[in-house]
Length: 240
Ligand SMILES: NC(=O)c1ccc[n+]([C@@H]2O[C@H](COP(=O)([O-])OP(=O)(O)OC[C@H]3O[C@@H](n4cnc5c(N)ncnc54)[C@H](OP(=O)(O)O)[C@@H]3O)[C@@H](O)[C@H]2O)c1
Image (cartoon, rainbow, N blue to C red; front, side, top):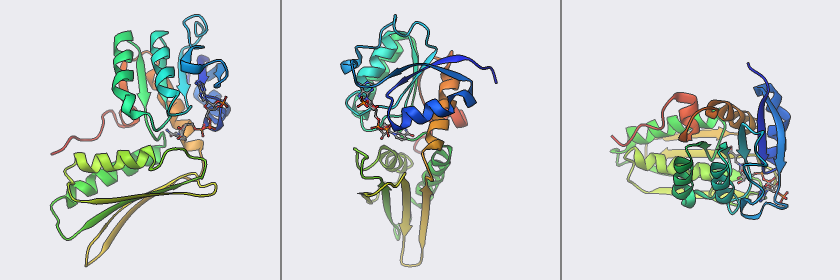
């Protein structure tokens, strides 16, 4: 793998630090780290400050992410965003990226396992959409410091089920406790049987590796992309 692409970390908390630890395995040198200090509304993100940067990975907060991503686009920097809870602003961020002619990969979950899990949930919802005997649930648990609930991943799973034609009620719930790195579950229950699909994250490394994989992929590309496109070459099948 070619080494030495220059990486900026926007957000230097748990995820930013883990990305830094693993960056060299993906051929990146971390040349810039930004935390909240001096970067309200993304004001520390300028063409000048980012002149030596090839790509940025953003793990911050729902309030900060849209500002950071717009400023990165305006500075001509391709970016990967793993921050969750800001997606009501996705359209305006996507407009800024397209206007600037830069590239963005966003995902509420950069785990390869979750991306595969998402496909299994999608297919199950599609196969059961006309089976009236089944009720569905979607549940997740994370550590008690996680700010958004339900998680962006769970909301994305439910949205995927809807897109695949599952129009019956889905009972959605979330727990926050202890240090749990993240479990997501989707199930279907009938009088005859139960189907349970569950993904359990063992630690945060999978997210960091996935974000670094996406950063390598977005180098030299333009437009707004999901992690599924990075992994599988396309997003979820549309409703059919
Ligand atoms: N997509 C995925 O796979 C995935 C995986 C794990 C987590 N996440 C999400 O990623 C986000 C970050 O998670 P985390 O565990 O790393 O959180 P964290 O440990 O709380 O770190 C957040 C970081 O963001 C920084 N920050 C806040 N405002 C900023 C700004 N305006 N500019 C630059 N940095 C700013 C904070 O800086 P200070 O230290 O100065 O406050 C802190 O370093 C959350 O939304 C979480 O849900 C996503």
